[in-house]
Length: 129
Image (cartoon, rainbow, N blue to C red):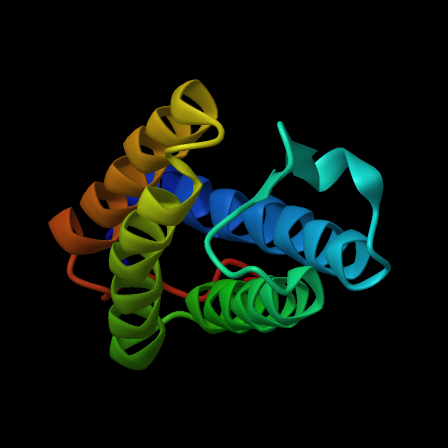
């Protein structure tokens, strides 16, 4: 068994878990109409904060599903993680007008997740082994 790349895959898994949980918490707060989501009276991209909250919550669940799939190993998990990380970069563009530094930081981390999953071909064993 080739253990090359296991660290990168573990990094990708951990980032997907952390960002997924973060997005679920952020989405639930937005659904609850928390006031700290308003910057100078402007709400993110969608004027209805609850709709934005549901979108972010569903996105967080997708990230956790991708993390679980990466944890199990194999090609499906690898490709699902790549797709979710790639879309995560696009999602961060919606946050850019409000939180530019945080958005750029997450874009960089998603790029590292993409590298970790793309550079190593998914022939690793499941991380739970």
